[in-house]
Amino acid sequence: MELFKKGDKVGKYTVNSFIKKGAIAESYTAYGSDDMLYFLKVFDMSDMPKSQLFESKEVFEIVFCKELSEEQNDNVIRYVDNGEFKKGEKRYHYLVTEFYQGQLLNESVEKDGVFDAEDAVQITLCVLNGLSYMHSKALLHNDIMPSNIMLKETEDGMLLPTIIDLGHVSYMVMGRPNFFVGDLAPFFRAPETYRGIYTPKSDVFSVGALLYYLLFGKAPWEVDLSDCYDDKNLVKAKVKEARKADLVLETDEIQVPDYLQEILKKALSLRVTARFASAEDLFNALVERLIPDDVAMAGEVLEDPENGAGEMKASQPAGASRIMFRKGSGSGFDQVAGRDELKEQLRKEVIFGLQNPEKAKQYKLLPVNGILLYGPPGCGKSLVMESFAEELGFNYTILKASEFGNIYQPGVIENLQRIFDAASLKAPFVICMEEMEYLIPNPGSENVTKESVAMLSLLNGCAQRGILLVVTSNLPEQIDPFVMRPGCIDRVFFVSQPDLEARKDIFRKHLSDRPCEEIDYDELANLSEDFVAGDITETVNEAAMTAAYMDVPISQKILVDVLRYKNPTYATKTKIGFTK
Image 1 (spheres, helix red, strand yellow):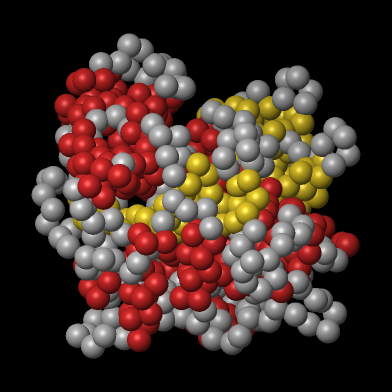
Image 2 (cartoon, helix red, strand yellow):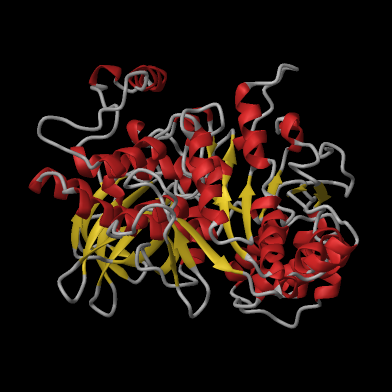
């Protein structure tokens, strides 16, 4: 039974109607003093677990909602107000967000039936846009499902999909969620979440399940759970058993385009490593397929003469993906603060010979075929790789190995061959590949596999085709050692934690668009020795939440206080655990 009736006062808001009761809160519509209608969420603090409170004071959902409203994103619900009050002996917190006229996605499907493929993709793109914004704030949604998406009516009569429920938002969780999981929709949850692991890829799975629901009117692998009652272990067992079956991707009534079937398979992969790496990657895959496939075959190149950007399409079956590329500016290292020793190494050992082929020939310098940038996660390998490609000034593309699967899966080596063939048409060309350990994993035995031999054959001789391979890895020991040899990967560079200048630059970038007092970046950089970029991001976010809660600008003291108790992810700058 709801706590409040129509006409009850909640702070300065007047309850209009009850919406639903959740595990830790109740939702209503309510009128403000401006006679505008709003969404109102009321939290009974007597029932609130401490794990749901920021610094044991404020409800995490309120903190996160305010943080997400720092910038405008039309696909995420907007914060309006929050406060607290007492009723009888109980204390309540409340959150007010914009009210949207429209229909929930599940209500729309129940009323009007499933969406056609094009409309389903457009809705999914909007959800992914909102989700990508949340991920950029280092926040996960964890509960993407049809009843949490509103088809908001805009002034021009269009329907704008918007994520409206932030009740399960969190930072990355690796084993013990700090939010209630009992009300999560079983078939919209990624398999790893049943083990307490919530990452951007688990959000991607949920979006894949949402897209499937829009097309088929039910969740993927959905079966009847009515006999489970409230037994969470039985629900988990039945979901796991249901997912052993093949994913149904077409029926007599519903025909899904081949490209969309492939995207659904990847988004809904039960193996995390085979899934899209991010919401942005899934977004790009869907956008790409909305573009009419009118590009000719056999490696035709489409190029924008204004900025050198374009896309290549290798000789391959119709409907195969395009490779996005751009022309390096020749001054990429200017965008990277610090790291002078590493930049000088790259200039001397790689860039000089490639930019001065006559000098290289005169001194009989062997062409560089491939280089590896390795080091702990969050140390800026991707930034260094992209700035290197820009500095070199050649055409380049950046790919993620995790998007391809690995060389032991059917078609992966053939697909890579097409990419290298397409790149050779625009040589000199730099192929940048992130997460190399996913693509060419160590087989774990001394026996050389036929797949390893095929990859070595593909990668050897890149230099003679005008291609430079640049790869990154967090775990180089997990790359097949058979391809880690001169003539394939010629140079190996360790990317350590950001140095003093780099740390100052990261702090500046994260604080540049937030309300701040005068900041001493030298002190922050000195106090954050050994911090990776992710550690600094987390530091700034914690300081920002503290300042927002106190309603003051972010100060040097707040930042220093956070730094004094925060430990770096990696305690030293040694290469232990990151040897070739």
